[in-house]
Length: 210
Image (cartoon, rainbow, N blue to C red):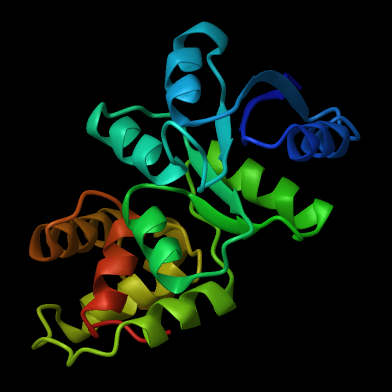
């Protein structure tokens, strides 16, 4: 198989070298570029055409969060995984809501890093139960009145657990087309355009409980 092309963005040389050593232990990944800040990363993208970006948060010139927001505003299809030392709920929520496909701490395991990269390249958001729990605990405001029907909430719970449309259809006893119609209604009600944002918006507003 063709290896996934990875762009590493971190202002610390030692961290970049460490990530390269880890990724090079697998034939699934190829490092195509390195950047020391968000601005360098944005400038490099068209040149190296990565399949996925590993992005630190706190960097000079332009932070990872700023870069992620800019990429989202440009409708850049390349998935970003935040890889940081900052174990802060607000940063995590902001990064994920801005479009990141994952949030990992730099002490994560090799296998977990690989799983997140592969999921991101497939267009999926891989989130641990711990991350979801922290999103909930970080939002202590009173939940708004539910906008979704019971069935829509159940479907969104299935989405949050990683179920595909076909699997949800079998579980609920409806057609896959009907599942997709429900998802479209959910997106419209929550004002989002993706599964991951639908899950996070519903979590933040107290509609969804994992």
